[in-house]
Image (cartoon, rainbow, N blue to C red; front, side, top):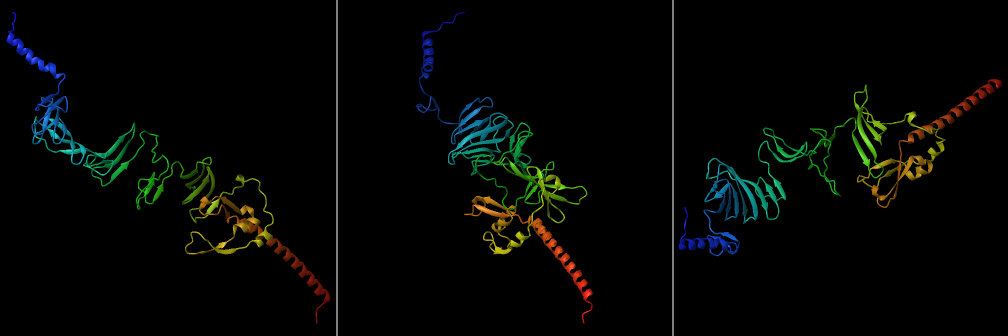
Length: 394
């Protein structure tokens, strides 16, 4: 069956299609007859909701006063969900200049009035970002407020870094910074100059120690303790290790240089015992005569100029004077960076080495005493023989 259109019907059809043709070149307004701000303008709202896309499902709403985008949420005089489930709104708080994201307690039925609005993200117009809280005076502020849930967790391939971990039922709030994978490292401030500050005056730091009782406690690993390295000089280093000898009741502090043993502090009396085994020495030779040089040494009392506010008096020698007699007892440190401005050749002295020199002098002195004693004995015998030959003196 054919359908015939009357002339009036054709004219009506063209009149309906004509605006669609013109719409390609015109601005379109809904609720306004003068759309000039955009190709599509919607003026007016139901409540504060101007537009809903996907109103028959979990769609998106555009809201005014304040400008907002609702996800499965629209606002009349109160917030509503479109369908059961989670609803979120993102809007501009114009007075504070903050762009915020809030969530609501999940709705259980369509168009339900929503409650339990919770702040999730706040971004100020100055760039500050606050997570799980309102505006904070920080470039990034993360609020941890759920017991048993980490405030921040950065996921690695194997391990995770956790900040401000609040554990349910425990009074502690731990912070963990881990390398992302076994065998990896954690670097703190590895660029340029700068300090790493730990603690505020009463902090105790433990390395491999979970409950340090001192300001710094280090638990050794595989018999290795503290090592101080000079990287600019072929990584020369001094090491300090606590070692325990079989049969002893305590442990001693051992000192190493470039992995070589130098000596140890004995746990009983605290005295330093230096490595002196014949097998670690070469070019062994007796000390030449020292008595005359020892007698030329000038013991003095003195007061140190620096770092001595109490003007405490000391006893010792002057390094420059000793240097002329026993050069091996002195050493010169060059440069002002060692703490004494204007002194570029600081003279130091090895007082421990005075022991062997003093013993050598005592030995020489004893040899002279022994020789004199022998001479005196011989003279005494001669005198006794002369007295016998002369007979009694009357």
